Structures are given as C-alpha cells and as structure tokens.
Length: 98
Image 1 (spheres, rainbow, N blue to C red):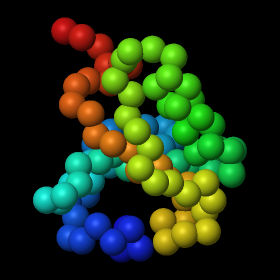
Image 2: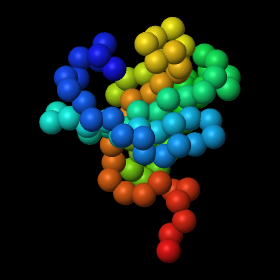
Image 3: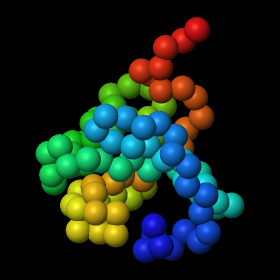
C-alpha cells in the first residue's frame, strides 16, 4: 500500500470471504475498505465490481461506496486485483438482522 502514499496505516481484516478478503484501512486522513480479490476471472473481476457499484450508485438512493482506487491486474505489490472503497457506516445488506 506504500505506492498509494497514504502515510502510516492501520489495516485490519474485516470480513474474510470465499472469493475476496475485506480489510478496513485507516489513518488520520483516510477511512476506507480494501477488497482484495482472488483470481476468479483475472482482469474482469475488479472491473465487474466497479461497474456494478457505479450502476447501484446511479440506480437507487441506497448508500453505495465510491471507488477511490483499484487495480484490475495482479501485476502489483499485492499480486491480486484490488479495489479501495469509501467507508460508509452501517451493515452490509447480506448480514442478517437480529
């Protein structure tokens, strides 16, 4: 994450998933979510997610995170596709409510 020049970061695994891991990325300037994607459909996985998020942002009034940065190749220091998203307070839609 050094190449993003965000300074000293706190990175915490938030939600391990089958096809990606979700990390909370924080410092005094940034509060974001990092999705690191497994190579399910290399080159298309991140692009598909970004397109879906953009569609969701335009199609309804639900809070949808803005894409801050990303890389749809594994030719980076993480060696996986990744997407850095705006953090939005709340619970994911796929979480069960008690």
